[in-house]
Length: 509
Ligand code: FAD
Ligand code: DLZ
Ligand code: SF4
Image 1 (tube, rainbow, N blue to C red):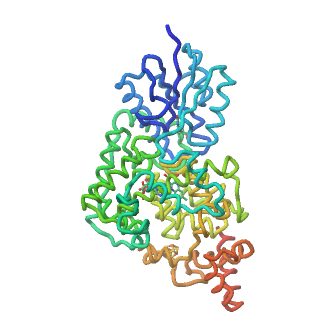
Image 2: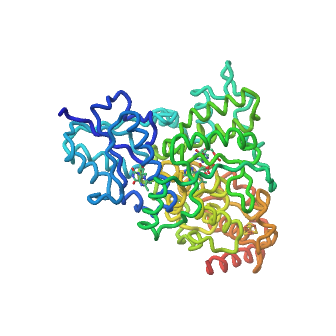
Image 3: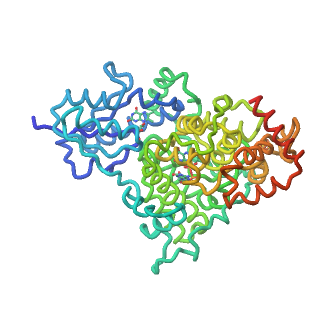
């Protein structure tokens, strides 16, 4: 028998066009897919996230076999499962006569470090292929960033618009004359019975087997499996994508930042788990969005707003993750040290905005961007929680969380742990913002208008306490000039009351 190339396919490489497979002859390759305990437990991932990934992997293995590939699939409960990627590659090199290993680069430093050891460990040449599911290569991002004093997503995004031609006219000018329509995308929403709903996919026998396995093995992990709703095949993910394009996208722009009690999804796409694991192709999706705009089916603020999230933010945070290196995860610019409050794992808090965002996260492994940024993220930031603990929580609880995308969003954008590489100012706010963008405050036990006292909204005193606490390192930030002026104009006893109120709250936390 001729020697084979071993091609490990990781759980976020579930794309038929993954670069490790390009130009390979199925007769010469063994594809290795590995369910391993260490990937589920290096942080305690949400049960539904683990179940989603394992079920999508099992379905993808079937789809690969149907296309003629030989797939060696190691299940989590296989008797000799070693529990790690390197252990499984080692076992595979003994099962087969392997003369080469090929793999698409992993999405995190942790796994890249393992891959880099394989050549020495197994004495077999290892080829690492670039992940071509992204629009910018590492080199392109680094070239763009090189020599700039300050990096800003907006300018990188324009490059990506030019590169892809999305919403760019024949003269290289942005559709409608502006690159960015974010200012039109900040409307609060009202409860609406006609609101579109994502499809809830009923678990098939493969998914049911995975759900039982996860319930048995990971009972101490956060989250619930009761409302498991994910698409687990390419076809189902495409149906969810169609549902979004046809029913929600047109209003995505207007209500992008809105929050409503009891409505986890609003007009969001709920496509991130599929984009990040490879069931959907990001560029393809953006092209369809641009086509819908060109056909006059959706407004420009929806099309541009959506495309910006993907070719702008998604690409940008990836670029930062790889550029900043493996120590990015340890940054703590504001030296915040408080442990993460227990209620992040139970949802048990009388602050309604937080119980809503955390409750749905534990039920669905999903919350939309503004909930992540301005509710759970904002609270952790102004309460002074250790950004590493916050990072681990986000990595655990969201079905779309892989370090390359989660870490810059959490540690950088939301916790200002990188001192302003991603965000030009900390996303800290009082209850006022939450009251403006949601209907939570009306039924919360706290009064969003009050700043101190037992029934005052805790976000208010915490916000001022955050500014006061970090004045030394934040006072020169131009974008904070106004709040610092307001703070410094307050009477000393008002300031003292705010800080006392914050301290009393934090002591009880
Ligand atoms: P939509 O609102 O429909 O947006 C469309 C798509 O745009 C998303 O599916 C996603 O692919 C992309 N997108 C939007 N915003 C961002 C962003 N800031 N960064 C990268 N891609 C973006 N996104 C993840 O995919 N994984 C994460 O682990 C993750 N962690 C986050 C942590 C924090 C603290 C914050 C503030 C944001 C995080 N995001 C993360 C970004 C964003 O919240 C999610 O992409 C989005 O909520 C996913 O839901 P959706 O598919 O309905 O998105
Ligand atoms: C997140 C995850 C989990 C829970 N389990 C697996 C697994 O058993 N096998 C696998 O190949 N991938 C899994 N993943 C996704 C990986 O953690 C992800 O592919 C790597 O972190 C590389 O980015
Ligand atoms: Fe949240 Fe404060 Fe509004 Fe309550 S009053 S929902 S705690 S912002």
